Image 1 (cartoon, rainbow, N blue to C red):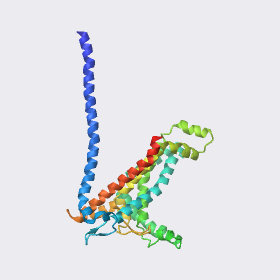
Image 2 (image 1 turned 90 degrees about the vertical axis):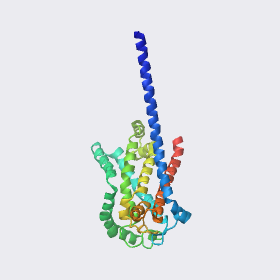
Image 3 (image 1 turned 180 degrees about the vertical axis):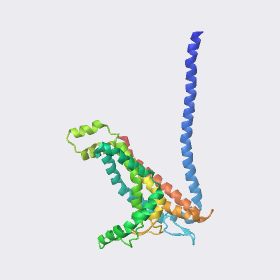
Image 4 (image 1 turned 60 degrees about the vertical axis):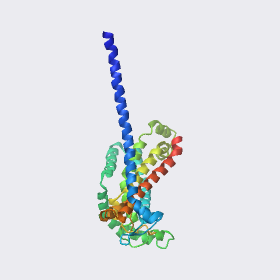
Length: 320
């Protein structure tokens, strides 16, 4: 009798464990499918909502620079140009600074300073975007209009190409100012990612490099960066994704003008800022609302293309 009890207990425990595993597996599958369902519904809703605009204007909608609600003529060219340009400029400004912050925190900073600086960097990511926009409008724009832009306009006057890139009235608002605010916003994401992945490098690798006479920069260039390059690129792509979709901060400082100019000091707009400004004034079922939804779909496609390109760049390294 006692032997029967002894043998039945493990079988009961095994059955309960099997049920729990199946429940857990089903929950994980449902969670994964739910993500795909949400993503698919988002894409589908944007595409269906923007379908009247695609039908009305055709492929030319993507390249048209007109946005005239009075004549009911809409195009995505200006906002797509502004989105890509401000994001690329922001990434060019933010990546070196973020790398410098991560380098300092992991290799150069004294231990008593490492935690306060790291915490300050992480707190920057928690600041609402509208605060960055207000700070940019009331602080950065006056500085740009009074000091930075006049100086650069005079400095590059008469220099081929550069005089066209840095020309025009120094209003302070424009593409460069928006890119600067975006750079400040994405620095915490890139720097925090770089710092965390730099810390994952096994100490023995760096100690071996120091042992053969490498400098700190040589260790970073030859040991740390090759070891963490996949995650570093991922952090940069994370910052680019944040820059592409930023709304309120850009709306405050970009000038919100529907035109394309060769000057980086000129006003412009992005997809997100245009949607934020025009959406409240778009009647339901109107061609204007359809055009805004089409812009949202285009922004999603741009983000997908950026992600695909980043994966293509990383694929040869992932096989190594």
